[in-house]
Amino acid sequence: MVNFSLERTAPLPVGEAWRRLTEWPRHSDVVPLTRITVVTPAPTRVGTRFVVRSGFGPIALVDPMEVTVWCPPTDAGPGLCRLEKRGRFVRGWAEIEVRPGPGGRAWVVWREEVDVRLLPGVFDGVLEGAARAVFGRAVNRLLRRA
Image (cartoon, rainbow, N blue to C red; front, side, top):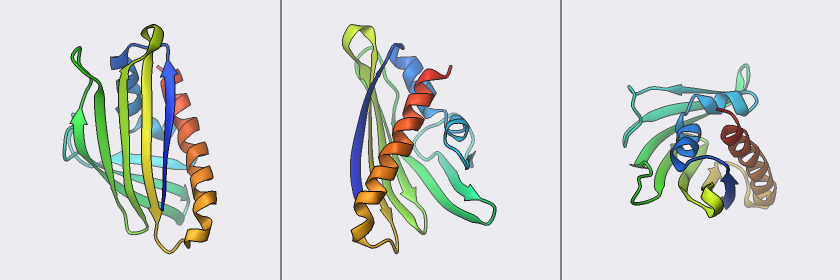
């Protein structure tokens, strides 16, 4: 199991950064070999469920997730979304926090705990490095694309 966090600032209003990070199908556009299917009706709220399928053909990980905290940003405070990973092989959670940052920029913190069943702990360093690279690149791309 690995835990990590990423921090980014973006020259965007907080609400726009939030929208870009929490429109789940957009993640399919920025993470190679990944498709996201939202299985509950819009809009996103506590209880929203979606399935992330990463891989090629029959060789893929299926990662069902559920939104367990949904607090969009307001003038009074930051936004926070928590996702629980409920897959057979991938477990854990992710949190997306968006708040005002320096110079009127949006400040984003992405926290994640990933536990891949059947993967021995000796591979935690490799898993953490891969997760940081994949999620870091995804966050950067999501914040850059309108």
